[in-house]
Image (cartoon, rainbow, N blue to C red; front, top):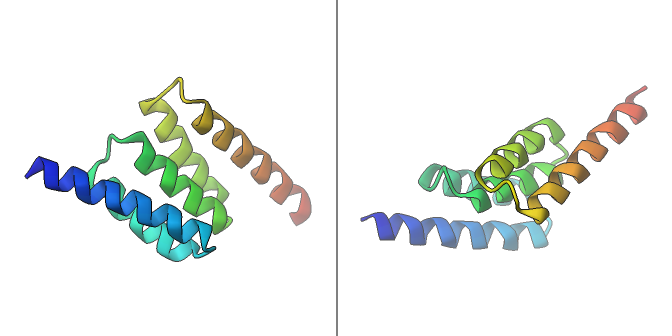
Length: 98
């Protein structure tokens, strides 16, 4: 049973990135959220969710997801870079609001 859940999570993570590539943030987020429910301690699930939130310009939720991913995989450079880009996007968004 655990293997099936892991396979489902992998499929959802892969489909989520496909939605991201197609520019469909809502579908990407839906798949990433389901993926994270199936494997909550999988850094890739958190990362995919963060990427979907970035596409939707929900930078605070993206930051939370990337931070969760980094807690699970603290040496992952790709996650570090995504979090850094997210923080920069948050800063830029605040500047344009003023």
